Length: 116
Image 1 (cartoon, helix red, strand yellow):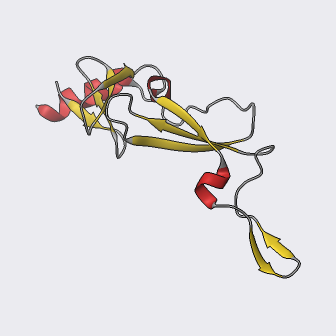
Image 2: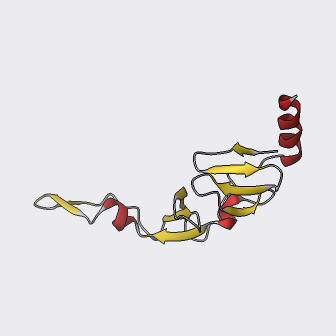
């Protein structure tokens, strides 16, 4: 068997049933688990991404960064090469969502059927 592209940065090794970084081939976690569990996570303040508030007029200040009391920014990285795999904007305390859930057995069947 071989690897199948799942996202821009992730493959699934169907033989080993592992999520893999397709940039460095590092194995992240079982493909039967959410790939984000196998990534390094960094919570970044919105001000690092969007910059500090700016004054647009004498009495008007604009802030493009999300309020940290209502939104957090989580970045997920390959633990081997450091490529950013995903970014999630979530309310504080919200669990990390599962954005991809694949039927690995069906994927293996399809791959074997297509190879014939």
